Amino acid sequence: MNTHGDPDRLPPPLGEGRGGGGRSGASPARSPHPSLPPKGEGASSAQRAAPSPLAALNAHIAQASQAAAAGLQSSAGQWPELRSAQRFRETWERLGAEEAVVKATHRAPENAGPLNSHMLVLRTLGLMRELSPHYLRRFLSHTETLLWLEQAQGQLKQAVAGKGGVAKTVKAARQKK
Image 1 (cartoon, rainbow, N blue to C red):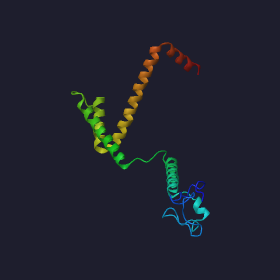
Image 2 (image 1 turned 90 degrees about the horizontal axis):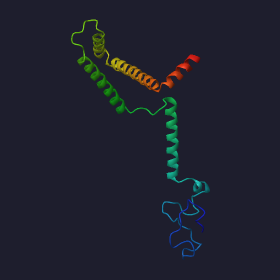
Image 3 (image 1 turned 180 degrees about the vertical axis):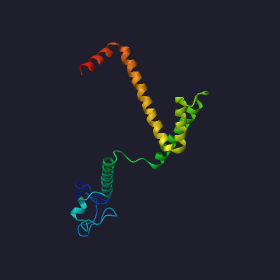
Image 4 (image 1 turned 90 degrees about the vertical axis):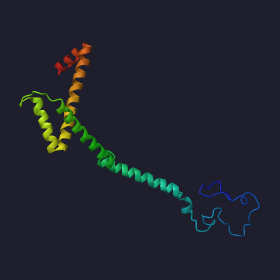
């Protein structure tokens, strides 16, 4: 009885095996583990070669995860956003937009005329807040992006102007084109 070559077989109990005074060869051998079928009965060679239930479960989970990830990445490019995270982001954007409008109205000039550009912008933001809060959020998002780009361009110009020689090289390269 050689159990070293077959990894799916359990080793014999302590009394059996290598000359340990076990059973005689005449009686049918019982399984060393109660949940396994008796040796030689009901277990075909295909069942012996089949992976364990845990290995089969792990393989199934891996396949399902890969299929789900491939399906989601091909359709959306990323994992879907949780509903609670989406609600939190939307609420945070709404509160931020309202706070920005309130801060802007507090900084309004006191004696501005009806055609003052600052007052016109503030009235427009107030009307947007009343009529379409969603549009106000989008508008402020675009405005903040444009402001950021303008500031980044100013910093780049300062960095290039500070180096002196680099500014001349960039201008010369633009003129060659």
